[in-house]
Image 1 (cartoon, rainbow, N blue to C red):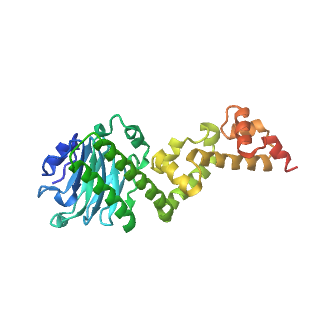
Image 2: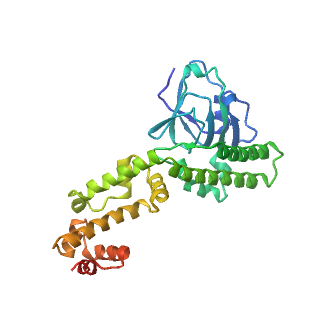
Image 3: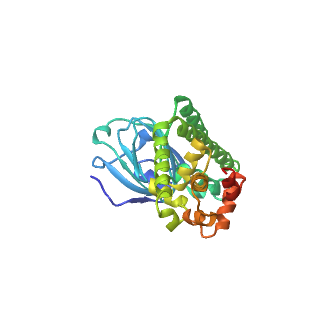
Length: 307
């Protein structure tokens, strides 16, 4: 039986009850083995919204997770992240319910981070908020590192809680998130086919935009427009481009603009003001300032270098 109505799970204790688990040892943080989760016989999908963060590695399940707009399989040992109040959907094949998946899920309620630097910093880890989320594929060595940190977190809240417990767990969480960020950076580089497809689509998008009347009518494409057209979030696209090209999305757009400006300056007799207008600038001074900041030459100096 599948329900399209999202199940809202506000607390970690509610999640434990939903999945037939004993009460959590700590109300704001919990590490759960996937093999311990219980599903009702008729349940083959769940659309949910959690009130807490989750980080998970899951193996041995032939189901799918949809988070944002992208689906991906569980069967390759994937690490994935969800943030509070984000809609997701999990589908599990009926044939697989008899099998015991391996892996774990870490649940962190935002209140656990209260009054710590990580409370704000966690929002800077882009993989929690991708509009199209790319799951993290780990090597055996990388997975061993992550599992070791999870074991440390579990052992800490299993122990007698004292005034140091929260700060120790917070530091372990930050280490976990930083390693995950490092491994995502590696993935951006090594998974060249899918990531370079995004880069190719970006190049095509900007080429079409800069060769149309949109530039003069609408002005420079915004980072938001580019991201939405490519169906990825602004933070994801910028992170990907930083790794692949060393530039942010905004810098990439400006680079294409300067290329177009150089072409017009060197191959046409249009005035600088006319070129600025065609490139979507209301004032030619703004265009000239941007051009000089990128080339160390004014538009006229650049043109004169061709005479």
